[in-house]
Image 1 (tube, rainbow, N blue to C red):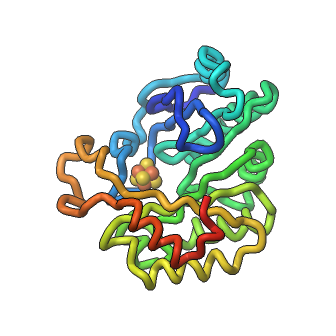
Image 2: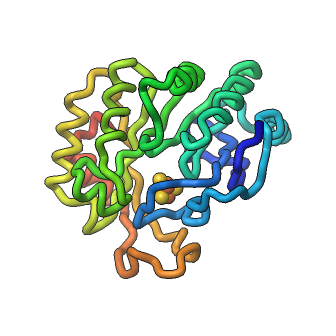
Length: 236
Ligand code: SF4
């Protein structure tokens, strides 16, 4: 089986622990206003790689990944579930630490394949775009019911997870929303790390008409203020 791949990043230090090889999969259903991978949305076939092809790419620089591994991101990786199972199984055979970066929309808890995938995953990076459903819809075009259900499921199943939240000035930095996020975090019993990511506009050039024109990038003070609200104990 082949995966539909957008691109690779060979030396990432921001997509999970250590130095990592990041595989960006092609295709996403969300339409995030701040998406810096706008060019991954299209579901049409881009470049096809088998799981072994990807391990071969990883092996080219494997001496750099001793404390890292492979992160699968996108686009939305869960749209290619069967391919992920093949890839993650091969990673496991090769003793490679695997991180899944997902927005948590495209899954079915009753599908045994999804649980197989989670069993093969060492770490989940789960994007919570907004704790408030109206805002979530405004940002992504979808409800936040599924990502929140996945969050509670991962927590109950004690699966290593880091929540990711993109802080966008005037959009996701509202105090009420951050208090709502805190309420969700405080209700969890296992997951206890949140990475608040500062919004940046480096992907603007990939858009014809950028939706966040005029919105400033987030800075270190914005991030500190947000952690002060949700609780510094959640700082990743
Ligand atoms: S989920 Fe990720 S790739 Fe998809 S639109 Fe949102 S930011 Fe972009």
